[in-house]
Length: 350
Image (tube, rainbow, N blue to C red):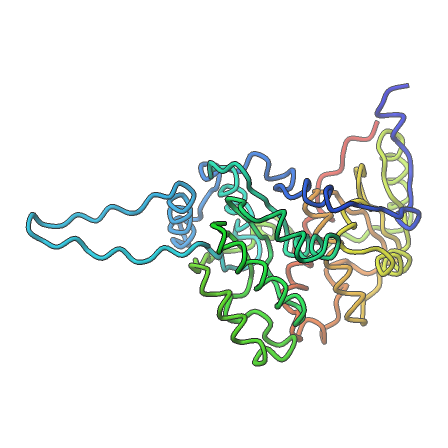
């Protein structure tokens, strides 16, 4: 029996109770597999949106520590060089290549100690190790890359502003992505005016770089996530499970199980899977359930695991009320990713 055949079959996410130590969390702070080979050279900027190429050139300079050369006359006083901020902040819409550029910074910077993780992974690290232990572990690191920087509650605001402040003070450089400019983080989600000082102090550490463009995930899609009939679902799952490990769970059971697992461990829920099977998708109306599902989708997208689903199309999983609220950008990003994963090429059945 081959190793592939031995690992084939159907598993259920709700049977998995993953555990992760702080050391494992720290060791996992690297770019997702899909960005293992991401470079500035492989980033394809869209000529329709000049800000993409401009952003790339700025980030190349940030990664190498180079400064633009400005020539003056023989007797002209050299221009004053503006103070370089310790961080860069990529602000742009969904699917314009921000994560690719962030991973390119990680790979290009000749740093001895560097880390790459999503916002939730860093807050999870603090939750697992405690604030002071996390600072001690990360202090002195050369580079911290933070993907999808979002502040959803006052607690996260205080933790991350304090953490970044201490790390910048120790010489750490920062690179982050988000769909929200740093001064607007938290708007519409909690009483941001109570935390403006902290938010603005954090923003002062970043040079904001705007990237415009069209969501590359939507360019080749028909606009809706694929929803299979029960018969199609069963046939595809059976064919795939003959040679690959796949999961099969009811949507409501997944949603319930996510409430019992810390988001930092969602990556272990999908470990080793070639496809995710989700039956009877419905529209979510509970905000907490929806936010947990978003975190789960992010991990599935990082791992590039195709999704097979029945029921309501996954791009309709969030209610109109949710899409009009303070988490709108987070939900829209998840929809973009769900759409892409439902269209993703399945592994070859064998």
